[in-house]
Length: 358
Image 1 (cartoon, rainbow, N blue to C red):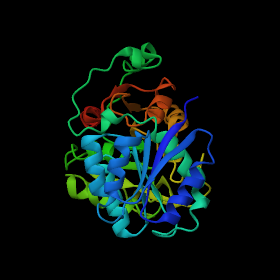
Image 2 (image 1 turned 60 degrees about the vertical axis):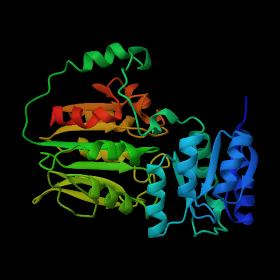
Image 3 (image 1 turned 30 degrees about the horizontal axis):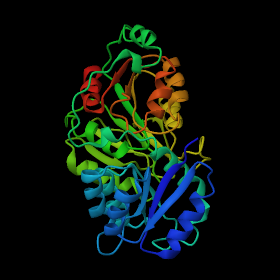
Image 4 (image 1 turned 180 degrees about the horizontal axis):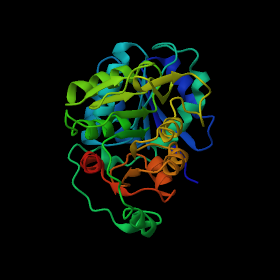
């Protein structure tokens, strides 16, 4: 099997060595070079033609953000950013994702993280996942694409599901699960929803602590609906999107006041906290509500088991992001394989599809 060629970029020689050592632990990865700043990265991409670049956000001469803009314009390649968990680091990371970074890794203890080895599994996993990313979907000029049935597993069963009768109800709840590539996908969806959206919206985006608040703040500034990081015991309101905080599971329960958010730090589910499966299973227990579930870009299968719980509760419509617009098709593909998906849509059409059911 051909190895994944990786270029490691960091202004610290120590960090470059540490990242190289971690990635070299995988038999699937080959380090083809290192770079010490943004200018060096751009030159070496042209010469070494790596499959994936890991790049620090903060570098001298040409920083990671500015280098990324040039890379995605002149020589597109999957880039995984490394960032500190400070507020500035989180904001810059989201900016990098907006400019085309496939994913990011949060350094555990700042720019010079001597303890980087404790997240070695995550680093290897994200680099391998990035090597499979759909770079076409990162283009800012995404064209409308036709989805062919050959791209969708068990398409005939999906078509049968779309014929199910959608019962009329005044109470609906929307829940979205996403991972790698999710911030861009969420922006494409949430910014197209109206301020008078007649449903609350609950979101699980796989992110570490310290990043979801910046994500919520950014999306809120761009959207007509209110977007916020969820708080414990918070009452759900129509027209508001609640993003699960990094490091916390988000569930919903009924109270005398209405539906309220519960946050907890129980064990991760299949490596995820927050977990889409946990959110979906929680929503399945809320009677008298119709549910709209959306699974978008991301590696793995989080959300697919939760869809089964939601389906057992009745009154469900499921939307999955298409292979064409997904940066990583893992989560949508797993959702489709449950045969519970009603519609497969490119990300630019998901908001319109949600509104059709709301």
